[in-house]
Each structure stands twice: as C-alpha cells, then as structure tokens.
Image 1 (cartoon, rainbow, N blue to C red):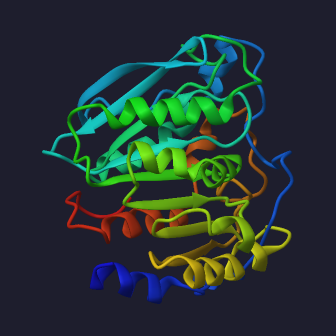
Image 2 (image 1 turned 90 degrees about the horizontal axis):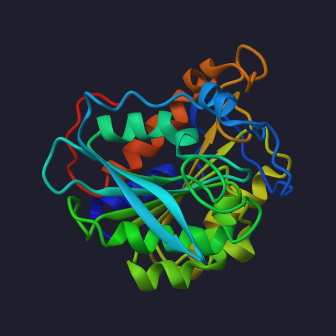
Image 3 (image 1 turned 60 degrees about the vertical axis):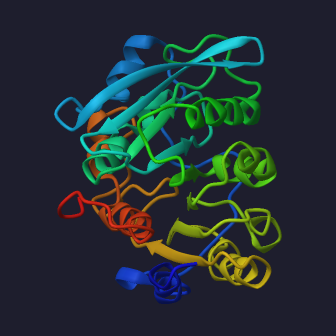
Length: 287
C-alpha cells in the first residue's frame, strides 16, 4: 500500500466524522429504499435520468449476457484519458441503473468512469426480477472489465447494502476477472466474520442510524486490518438513513423525484476523497 493510502486508512480508521457515532447489521429487508415500481412511467419519474451529457465524452450502452438473458449496462466516460473505473453493485430491490444516476453524476464530475446496469427485469434488461442477482453482478463486472477507455489497473468496486454481501460471498470470482484496486462498502451489511473475504483495500461508509453500528463499523475494520494487509477505514454519516440519504429535514419521500438531491454530502465527499487517495485524479472541488 502506498504511503498516501496508508495514511488515509490510518486517519479514517475508527474516526467518527461530523459528530457521528458507529453501527450495524441490517435485515435483508432494507429500510428506506426506493420501492418496487409498478410500471415504466413511474420508474422514469422516481429514478430521474442523470444529466451526464455535459460531463462525459461518451455514454456507451453495453449488453451483458447473463444466465440466458441480456442485461443492459452503461459505461460513462469522463473527458480525460484513461480514468479510473468505478463499478457499482446495487442495493436490494428491482432497481435500474438510474437509481445510481446521482452517484454517476458525482463520480464522472470527479474524473471517474462509471459502469452501471439495469437489474434483471428492470429498465432495458431482459428477464424477470427475482433471481440470479449475484450471477448478474459477476457477469456485469466481467463485461465491464473488457471495455476500453479506462485504466484497467485502477478498477474500483462500490457495493451497497445487499451488494456488499454479494461482493463478499463472490469476491474470488470478481478478483479472478479483475482484482479491484479498492472497494467501497456503502451501507455495509458485513460484520467482522464476513468482511475478511474481501482481499483488497476497503473503505466502509455507513449511517449513524444503524442498529448494531459497532459490528459493521469499528469491529469490521479491526477484523479486516487483522486478517487482510490491504487496509481498512471507516466513515459514519450523521443524520442519514440506511442508504445514506440525509434525513436532517425529515424522512425521504421516495415517490418524489427530488429524493436524488438529498444524498448525504459528507458520505459522497468522503467516498470520492478515498477513491482519489489512490492516485492524482483531476476534477476540481469535491461535489
């Protein structure tokens, strides 16, 4: 690990930033997520298409063969040569790529390429939602890793909620395709026993509202540091719900498209700062 990355890990490990406190494992039934949507029109309203046009040099539609169907993926490339790539593994539920449109906006503006995909049976993906989530995530990563336009030595995985479990349980498969330079666990569900499966630098970002904060926070970091030499660190987002949206002004109304504007600023700034710590990444001020 470089001195800069080690220093970042030491600085962030165990810290409670912005007056936060640490916390925990959550049921597979995830609290506070956008609901399953009855139709495409509703989906379009609730998941606004990100305004990437002025930020990218290319938005590439990428077909993903997976277990008998074709999923729809998208590679967003910023206007710079050989950027790092961030591959996103979704939280639970039948969500399309635009559930992470707000994050793609922030990452592309910060100089990162981003790969997102529509889950099976959502958006432009074929099939029926309800099966093969892990297989589909691995298949999407396999296809993403073969694309041109980013630095293949700087591929990062950002997994959220149930996605953190998928990544831990199938990490060997992801690493065989392309060992990630680093992993961000948003809304992590991984306690000390499971996080050690991730043999890569890890940064955990969790809400201060989690039920058992210490297990997925400080204890998970300590376990990873003890068993994996790559390094681990932690950020706790104050006044946020499970999926790291700001609830300072009250609960999130997921039926209101403006939910995308309530992402937790501290959490997203911290994620981008950690990703940037691996290299000099241009992009101006953090969003």
